[in-house]
Image (cartoon, rainbow over the protein chains, first blue to last red):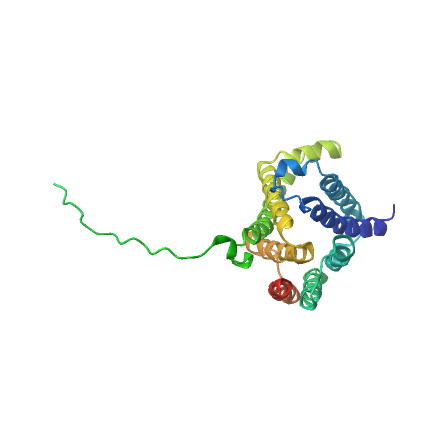
Length: 116
Length: 154
């Protein structure tokens, strides 16, 4: 696997992981109280854990071959990706001010690492 | 000799508020405490791991990558750092169960700001002007994010 596909897979997997987690911990109308033990039975929570581990492994592969100053700013793309996924997979509504905030945060993270 | 306390306590007037009528927006936002706690713990975990690795690499054993990895993981600061990071993850799961992910996830960018500043103050790493600017922009974005929460509730 090329280092660049490893990097992009890391970004996409870590974005998906957050959406999986949200899907797994959201109580769907049953009114059952939040409990950590019951989370272990959710396939979405397992998907989160597995994506998280895979993303970390791929990140190590990418980092071993790509310059940090290139790889780190790209990571911030995961913020808008999570937002888009949350609309389609979770039905979240994103007000205009939040898109603005996401854009500012993405730009800020890219700035922090661009200068490394 | 103990003087008797003779203070008359007036009974507090009962306030006619029915709990179920109090809007949810007034409930204490524990999930925000959990989210910020998760972010701070993750940052502290990263910095501790870094501190541990700095001293662990000095005594790197000869041998394969596995032997080295075990050596690093067994360093007390690295192990505690990983534990703190794990604790942060548990808090994060609670926060995610209560708030939308499009709101919470971008807040984790604070990690970059905290770890960068920790690198400066703990390890003497330099922070360029562009990096300070990035930290300021991230904080501005996080503040903007709070506004978007109010908009969502409307």
